[in-house]
Image (cartoon, rainbow, N blue to C red; front, top):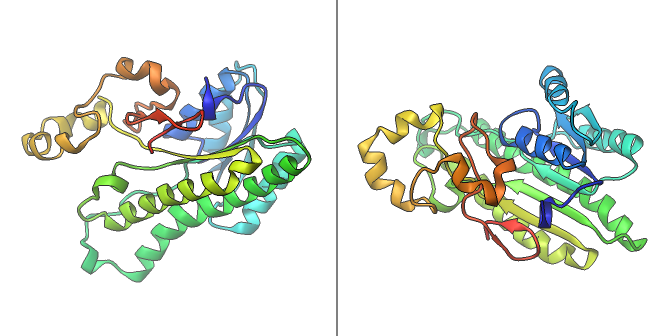
Length: 260
């Protein structure tokens, strides 16, 4: 691994790291020798994720954390620092999707606020806690840190009846750009990873939809659904059969893979 994922021998916090892309990141970093702290609200999933990495050379710890609650994030950060002594990377993958097929004009304020709280507030709380720790180390001469958020194709192309989801992901992209500028002097990078699609059971029905293939496919950066092996050299460690994602639209700008 290189760039933002070069965390061998270091410590990474992964929120939402007990399933999908988050679990793939955790497993790959752990296999490369990174110590991993998984923060999540589901104790059983946290334990299963940790069990899946028992053979890895890196240590694994789990911590209950509700990323929408700043107090819970503070407690999780303290527990992680007590266990590992430091945090070098933070991967924010927690969030929720569209939440139904109702149109924008029919959405309730409660639905809107819940989406923003889970997809944006959580990243704010976790990134702020990690950035404070990283910049404190930087002032002591240890200039290193990696902040990574999972974005979405919806942030670039929108999505019918899931527009509030697209809005939160677009905001994450902007946040990472701004943080990249602000934190550069501390040696801390901030990146948003933009997922694409791979073939899986979840996408079989979509690929059989002629209208989708004709109207939506040309707007996807990779222009087609790919086989997992197509992208092994880019970011195989981010690919998930369960989530049907791979990082498809990546290039290097600051030593790390990013969509922008």
